[in-house]
Amino acid sequence: MIDLRSDTVTKPTKAMLEAMMQANVGDDILREDISVQELESLGAKITGKEAGLFTVSGTMSNQIAVMAFTQRGEEVIVGAESHIYNLEVGGLAALSQVQVKAISCPVGKIPLDTLNRSIRSAGVQNPRTGLLCLENTYNLNRGYAIPAEEIQVASDIAHQYEVSVYMDGARIFNAAEKLQTCVPTLCQSVDAVQFCLTKGLAAPFGAVLTGSAAFIEKARWLKQRLGGGFRQAGYMAAAGTIALQTMQKQIAEDNRKADFLAAKLQKIHPDLVVWDGSMTNIISLDLSGFSITDEAFLQGLLQKGIKIKSLDEKKYRIVCHKDTSWDDLNYVETVIKHLLLRVDAAQI
Ligand SMILES: *Cc1c(COP(=O)(O)O)cnc(C)c1O
Image (tube, rainbow, N blue to C red; front, top):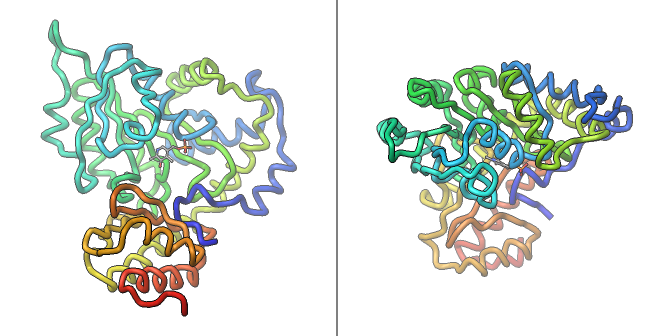
């Protein structure tokens, strides 16, 4: 099976499994797990922040960050296409008790005039704007990589009003590779950031949240409240450390694979994929111009051993990752071409 639904399907490498066997562990709630502390320091260093916190997931990092930065009843500005807004079970309302102002970022770009207008001024009837949340890469928004300058300008606007800025950097390494920049540069102007270990980095578990030492102290306490306090989590952290040390080259290759497949798919029909130089390892397929039904398309792929993710009517997502080969991508293109051009796919 060629599974292109997400880079979360990646399995750990042998080096990660070996590191897990040798991890130096202890009770992490008592701060006695050396492997967890190593991962947290490395995460902080890699993002250019003071301190780090190993969490269960990107979702948990995001929710803890919002809980740490906001007060009940405040307003949080998020991208309308963001993970934190669309795919976290209403956590902002349920956990932080904030209300959301969602602004649409059609081509990945944060519309600065809208952002400026969205920050509320003081007033007896106004909710206070508590936080600006950014996302890089912008997952549901075609995996755009957001350049450092754009993050800087948006952060400057928020900071001018004393509003903190948080970045969901689940795939920040894909963004840095694509933009040919380093991760600290992308994180420089935000107050806190998180990245996932379980996407292209292929670790089996976890995410790392980073920020100032004071922020991380508060975040650690909130993590405990959510039941996220760890004991011998060093086994998982050790895999994460190896992921950070060894998988950067793979991330660059994942982006190149997506470039390669997107270019091939574009040759089938120019409107089939939306692709430009700012996209990373996520390819968005748009089948509006084709008569094939969603069911026939997905079934046709499945019969040929290919899984992709359906996002909406006639909209799909393909994610390139370490467990798909270049040959697989050639095969995927051939199968899609046959399905769309209604050639008998049985002979592939
Ligand atoms: C995957 C993802 C998350 C959530 O991470 P989990 O570890 O699956 O909870 C958050 N934000 C973005 C942008 C993601 O792509």
